[in-house]
Image (cartoon, rainbow, N blue to C red):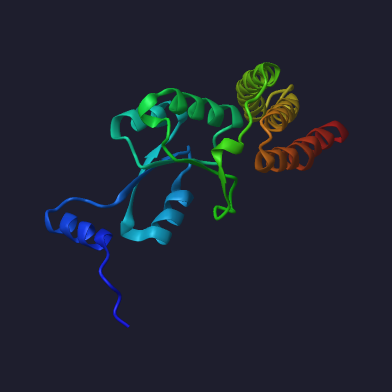
Length: 209
């Protein structure tokens, strides 16, 4: 059965004839947007053009520059960052009605939630989150310093070299605390295993020798 020609087909063919692109432009705001981009490319092919912004600030700037047809906020942004992006887009009149979708989490990229379901975090929650992020950053810097000090002590081969094990254990423990504050499950498992099965056993071996 032959399908009747629709007006939309004529518009599309005319656009192609005169070199006008009919591809929808999608902006993905995500520090790691490779999987989301692959999913969209595999699903829609040449029907869309994907642009990537690696953080919320770059994403907001790009939205105002290129005015995409839709914005996708990736799962690697924190809840507060997601809310801030939506708040700024909704307060900018040209993007008030722009479709925004939120990828709920990796690796299940097929489940997409409307961003309007995202609740505004309370002031107390925002303050606590910033404090946790600040403390985690301090712990990471301290962890790096302890790792360097511990490594230098162990490599120096002097009478107090054994204390290098304590430095390494302190380093991995601080990394474990920072990962817990950031709710980074992968790093929690890694730093926890490193602290218990490598550094703590190293300290134990140093003490009994």
